[in-house]
Image: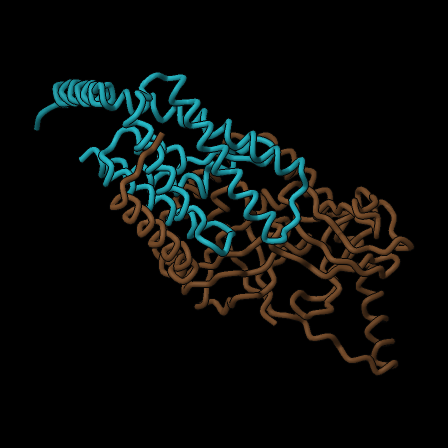
Length: 184
Length: 257
């Protein structure tokens, strides 16, 4: 169930990445929600699910991106495998460690994408290259932090408590309404 | 740090090969996915535009008033130009000029943008069924916006002119100097391969040259904002500010030749 929820998060993030995220771009750079989710899923799901969901996220991103080659389909599962291996060796549960790992992965992802573009003969000025490389990686790391917080809240049941309290409030309002409505 | 046994190594290599194969297949499966995912993409766009409308109500109202004044001025000017157009048509007839065929256009709405920062593209809500085909130019009333790269039945993907993958043959309107414009992923475009003696100045308007017939001739691309020397020293380059606001374009016209 938890893993299906992650799949749903990936679809929603994909749609947000294509539409509303443009309003939140800084210097024309926006965060990579899908990559942030890949990192989250790799740290919190079993290996099979993590790689599968990463592949799904990579395909989703490549379908809508401008590049002719499926670079994200290739890289996302590889990042997932790398994180799974690292997680077996060392404990990556501390906030700072997670963020550092997120930044490194986002930086490498951007570096590969930028270098692939440059080496295919396209002209990307050094300033633009550096700006996207650093800002996008930082922005993705901040998003990753938010995703961890949201996932922690979901795990601790804060969301369900919130929905239960809303349902209780609605029930109370409905009963007051029925009490005040004159019966025929 | 990571020790691999032979079996594991074989598994990882075969998995990487599978990934490589899959990533090569991506371009061919895009059409079907575009069809399926077009409708969910419409909803956030609609919500976003409604929220923007509410937030920027005051600014929009002021713009609306300014535009009403502008419309009055332009209507007067249009009436004056009507006479000139009639005169022009008469003279063209006298000189036996062939009328240039006006091209057909299909209006489309932008429903999505490029998911990463390493490209610049947009997803349109019209596709094959509306007559859109791969390679057709995309324009706005302000000038050239891009080119269609992928088409499905009900959606299409267009690459914008600030994407490094797109090159446009261009000329300077004033001096007819030719050059090749390509995207830089930034706010400006770059016009390269200009000779040392190129007649180009700041604020010159740059248009599509129509040389390779990929784009209609005379579409405004932008204005020159900076001129510099190539790093190799063999020529000059010019930075072009696009006429179209590429990050905020919401409706476009696809030119059907």
